Image 1 (tube, rainbow, N blue to C red):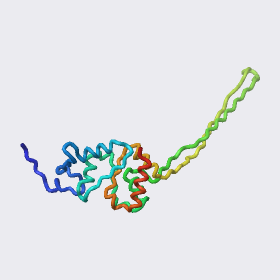
Image 2 (tube, rainbow, N blue to C red):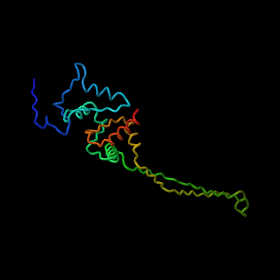
Image 3 (cartoon, rainbow, N blue to C red):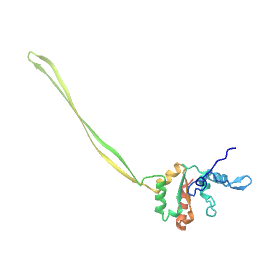
Image 4 (cartoon, rainbow, N blue to C red):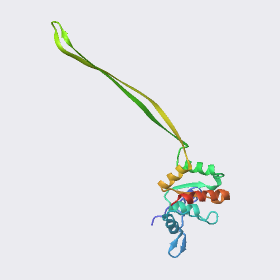
Length: 190
């Protein structure tokens, strides 16, 4: 058996996932916290709250169970207002503050003139002479429309892309703001 040598930096990683030291925690003989969280996340229309003492592995548990492409994590310590919450959420999903679309509105005008003449030119020809002259003219203008990012657009993005919001240290968020966030999500999730 080959022994693997680890450095201290491989083991003690306070700002990243502990790949070498992660321990699955059992709730009972045949039940783990990982299984319970996976089960809760499979049920749509739920807000899941994970509680425990500081540094007990709540955030690490979430990052173990939820695929990194599906999770949007915010820090409760950074959320001081409703605007902070929505702006941080929009930044995480990279939704621009304003979207401008431009479309070309054009008018096309055709002018065609037909002329016919009948007559005889002595010693040369006799019969019908005719021709057609036309001109096409196009005018247009670019019309720009601006649309501001909305909270509904953020929610629609999260729902349609099946994103999972993790608010780490939610207890740092003021109580009334906690209630606001919970109500917004409870009303929108199905």
